[in-house]
Amino acid sequence: MSIQDNVKSFFEVLLELGEADPNVFVISQDMGSVGPFAQRFPDRAIDVGITEQNLVGVAAGLAIRGKLPFIYGMAPFVTMRAFEQIRTDLAYNGRNVKILAVFTGLAAGAWGATHHALEDIALMRAIPGMTVIAPADMHETERAVRAAAAHPGPVYLRLGAFLPVHEQEYDFEIGRAITLRKGTDAAIIATGNMVWAALQARESLQQRGVAARVIDMHTVKPLDAEAVRKAAAETGRLVTAEEHSVIGGLGSAVAEVLAETGAGRLARVGVRDVFCTEVASYPELCAMHGVTAEGIERAILSLL
Image (cartoon, rainbow, N blue to C red):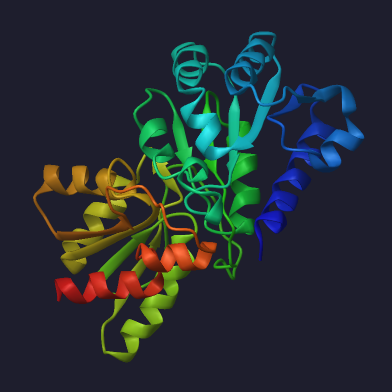
């Protein structure tokens, strides 16, 4: 599955939302075609060009007028260049705007560190009133976009290039984690792309006789603290997995919960406190920085 597959999935949901509600708008940032939504509703699809601050400002203005704007942009640029506008124009004023961010983590690959989004979760988590969601696959993306549309206030959706992980129907609820596999020796708490890697690591660990729980923490804020506390109490060993800096993201959020409860040992899988300056493909960059199933497995074994 590619980024384009996932883009297709959430644009199909946007088209459905647009058919049902004439207040739905899609505002993009020089991203080319915005899919079937633009073809069906050209008057409600706006491309502002490479002007991220203006992108957020236009969305805030539409929200003031009672519209439901979805921002569609590249994660590193929309979160960092327009951070002040997201903080003040959207969150501080409680605007009902949804941010759909693509090219997250290391997905931009060889385009270099300027195009990598390894700090976006940390930035969005720090903003009061901001909800932060990183779906695990395209099926969860569809559910997350619908949930975000119904959720009042600003929402940041971090979309990646996913492999399927959800095999059965389930209820998606913002702020409620999903246990994909049971286990009592350790727990892997993963978000976004890393949920699939967590499942692969779990299979390998099982061959070593290690029963690892796998938790899909699709909502990083508000975090499902009860799921973290339960996993810590029942397994004693936690590993977080995210395609993001280990500073400020899922691992930090889980560490805050554990520090307050005083239970469980924690190892964090993510990009260390460095810029990714290597020139390589996306899978190669993930391997270099240990954001892989093998990286998760090593982290679990280090706690046993």
